[in-house]
Length: 178
Image 1 (tube, rainbow, N blue to C red):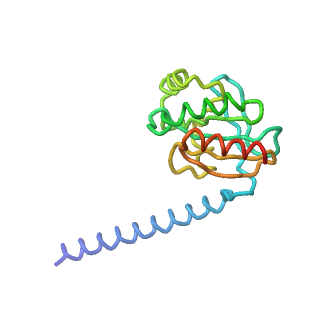
Image 2: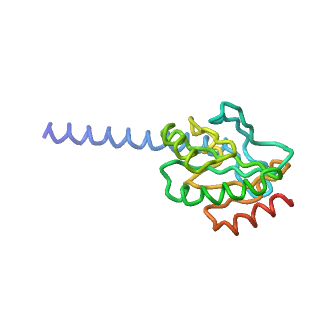
Image 3: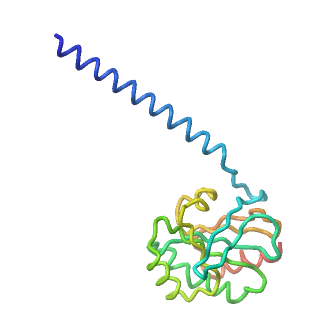
């Protein structure tokens, strides 16, 4: 009888602890989500500054001289490899008219693999390293590759994923014209 009461008491304590933890996690998640800027078309994008593979610092957010495409990617990502030639092609064709930042989600990647990928793809645009994951979190990144098209005023125009080269070029032309 005492043993049954002890087991029941222990189970009740564990259930109470589980409920407390669940409630605490839900409250923290709500605060975190409430503190993040919502991403909506025509709204300002979250600002961030990241270091590039070239050692430079790159800023996103606010007004700029040219529209911008921010492409989140990883070296282990198959669709990112498929998309790389189209990114290079569209950037090489329109590089004076828009900026392209390739943001590597470095927290889930290896720096040597990133460098190999960039060399193989022959990227001539800045490759930024999101080592902490803060930029990916701010943009509510769910998977890679994901690209954000941003106008000169720093507002989100569109979110895109892997597209055939001609469709990507059409999107970039519209971004430049905006």
